[in-house]
Image (cartoon, rainbow, N blue to C red; front, side, top):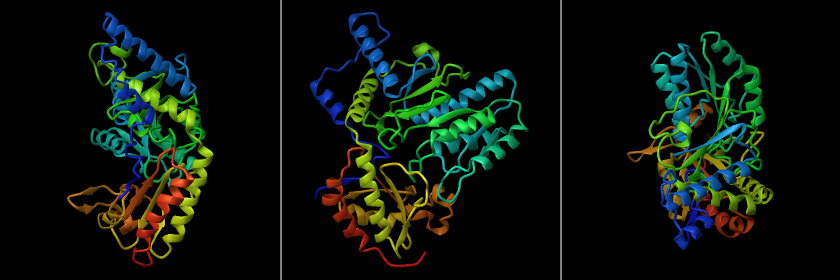
Length: 392
């Protein structure tokens, strides 16, 4: 049976450009800090990878430093903890702002800060997962009156489960109206939102994970405003100008460079939009009386994600049905010990008891009409026709 991988938001396969490079065996294993020829060769390749990333995302070292790390989870930890360390050194109390729908690494930061007596506040979102700007600004300004330090907002550009897109213009508005530092979680942007290469230089930090875009796991990067003042989380030998110690992962940087250059050259967002529109219309029709697609009323969705719930089946019961049909989907709720747990995202979107019934389809940036019509549509139909009828 041919299997169809539909979990690209969790991890994408290595990009073809990366697998071709690995097959050639021209692997730069040298330490880029070493002064011998092997080290210099690695350092040169690292410099070229940096230049490529600046060009790809239309930023410049004059406004943003580029820092490699292990991925967006580390980036969130470093940004939050680094700011708090800097504020503690100044004797001031900062404010952390986040969304109730944010990734667990963000919510865990908020929980830890709360346990330490620090101030946090949630952004206001509606039932579709959309940011409510005016209400959020009011909540932030109210909380700012209780602290004397800086405000950090975690802004999720593209949501990993719902596919809802928060335009960067909203982040700029938040910054202008609250004077906050904006950390943009951009992990789900490349290949999933048409303007993913156009980073606004007004915003402070953008963080990415390579394995979401055809690169290696355990690697990522951030663009950090040269005006941002924070403490490094990982100390050591002074690599990357002290922003993040540890020998740079040259192989990871090159893999990311090759993956993104290939994506930018070959990706056709308009074609991907056409396909995902067909998929969403199909799912809406097939789920009548059986479930519903989440965030179907959102003003802007990404180009590859469909989150839905099945009324009568929790995810640990429906996942095997898809798997037996060769469809590798993921649960909108995490599964542990064989039992589905409610998704905090679906709970906060008002799904109630159905919060443990979520499933997510996420396709690749190269997914096309032929893939949909000849492969995925027939396989999905085979499963969806077997779902039980029931009103919510």
